[in-house]
Amino acid sequence: MALLGAMVFIVSLGYGAGLPLIRLYLLRYLGAVPASTVAWHVGMLGGVYLFALFLFAPLWGRLSDRRGRVGVLLIGFATFLVGSTATALAPSLGFVYAARLLAGAGAAAIMPTAQAYIADSSTTVDRSRRFVLLGSSSFIGFLAGPAFGTWLAGPVMGSVVGEMGGMLTWPALAVAAAGVPLLLLTRLCLGRDHDIVATQAVEGDEAANAPRRHFVHASMLLAALASFAVGTFEVGFNLFGSQTLGLTTATMAAMFITCSLAMLAAQSMLLLSSVRRRIDQRWVAAAFAGSALALTFISLVPGAGSLGLMIAVVATGAGMVGPVLSYELLERKAAAAGALLGRQAAAGNLGQALGSMGAGSLFTLTPMAPFWAAAAILLLGAVLSLVWWGPTRNREIAARKPTDARGGANGGRASNLPAR
Image (cartoon, helix red, strand yellow):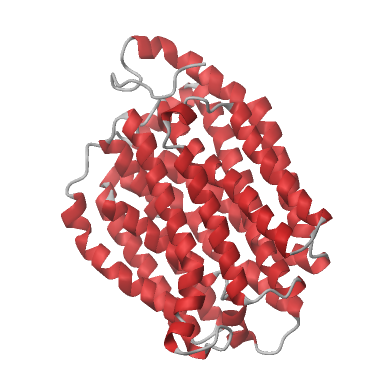
């Protein structure tokens, strides 16, 4: 768990460190261009990384089911480190995009394969708890990233934030250097892979199980909607805070930290069994709806204070939806976890990539447009949680009861979320 958590932390640290610096970083390549051009590239550069996650996550997941988790983690993490180094040393804007695509392709292997490794070696109760711990490692990395990228790489070295020059690339290089020891320790810490069920057989079984298939599709759609809203919000927040409100880079970093702290606190609540037992479609719908209301609020009261409040609320809702969808997918059927988690990661990454790419264009129309779009998507997610995800979940639970009674659904292990 320590190694897997460290890998996830490094990947998130690399992503978080670049968020407050992305405008300054791009200006090194763009020069004197209109603000709308910068906004477009801010959205597109984030979108390219996330699109790579979407494209490669299912491929890594299926490969880990067939060839083993450890090898996929090694190759994926090494690819991420090479992509991060190439991003820091890129000689041109085109090379930057290619490097981010490479880094995203490698990062796509880490979270779903780490979750699948945990699913292979955990009981049902331990699995949900360890998923939350893994998610918390991700948000701690995202939390540390902005501070590392702005306050440490600049002032500690004697430079003023915003006037760092070549130091803008130092965070990416430091992330790559920190990841090398983890790469060398992977075989030692993870050992041999556990036995893996053949993906083809599981996929055929799912195709014949209509309740299961419908529940998986509903979960994928919710993951995509939640991530689309997060991607739109992240880019919109970055542009709105810096260009509309004129917030400093340090203040933006502090707000990103607030976002990560809220996500971490929300995920920590899922460690409590009393909370996990109460999770149902109403709970998921409330998380979507609460985030939508926060985004609506800033359009009525735009300002730094409302922006900070919105960040906390949106991050709380988004921070709890993802882990819930992950362990609900494996709650009643954990076979071929790599392929399943890879598909869910792909759905979420596609949503976030589209949201990130669209936010830059929406911002050029009006600064509030990204927030309105994210709020509308979150409200749609709330409705679908009640009318589709919840009913399909209940039907899947009902369909699994006869098999569970014979002891064949979960390998004889008890479920940590009772049927409702």
